[in-house]
Image (cartoon, rainbow, N blue to C red; front, side, top):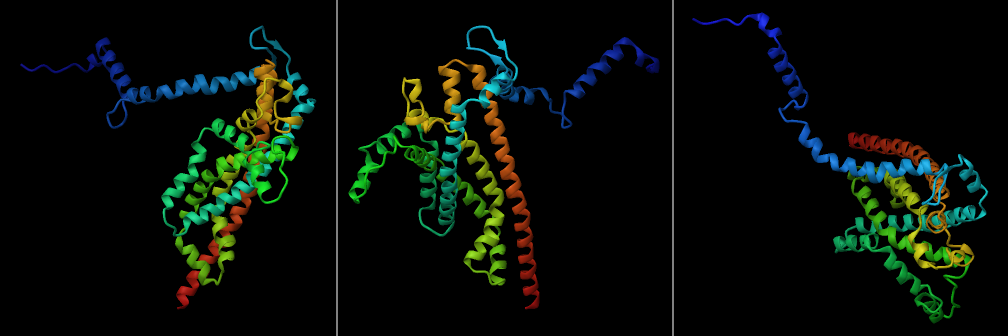
Length: 343
């Protein structure tokens, strides 16, 4: 004789336990029947490493910027005094001026050369792949090793002055004069980053639809008008990326200056007259040589503020021009469509 389950049994403790277990299983299982646990466990090492080596140092450096600490003894809370001392530090402002001068001397020529190289690679030339690899090699080469090489090239009896003397010119104090130091550092930065940015510009060029070039020809535009009215407006997002990354890298110059003018004498860090002293190099000197870690942390956060301001300026300038360029391109395409319909 068959038995019929009593509906009241659904409220028994055993039934409630089964219901809670099924609820937990449903919450831990994806809609397709897959469990959430294993994928989350697989990606958890990244978040653990980021929290330990990324997020924690950033938060701790902000806390440290309000402390006076030599790295060993007890911390002493000083509040905003570190930032006040920093604003009154003449050496810091000298390093800021040096950094901006080196950044300008390197970034502007580097972006122009990168754009020219991108146009050359975009044209139909042989061995394009080999050129791309050759242009990218400096970016992955050890900058410490290459700085040693450049130090030999720019020495008083180095290759650069020897080449100048061969054409009847006097040698230049590349590593002893104010602008010689800045030009030497700028050349090293250009050598390192021009190929990388050229490949970025090349990717932007290859993404431009061919119909836009056809619309410019229908409208009667010559090569220069096509460049400034069609190509550059559509490259502005790429130019923004290159300008922002170049600004971030340029304002954090350290390796070139530190290796080129390394010395055990604290007073000569940055070269003669400290003309090669950059913000990050001065931060390193104060934190790791003078053991003023709170002062170095405050300098790092002030550098972050400077980079953020310059990034915002670049974004505003390029985004406004980008809207105008897109409007011009839409006008060209409409005229092309009208000309095609007229035929």
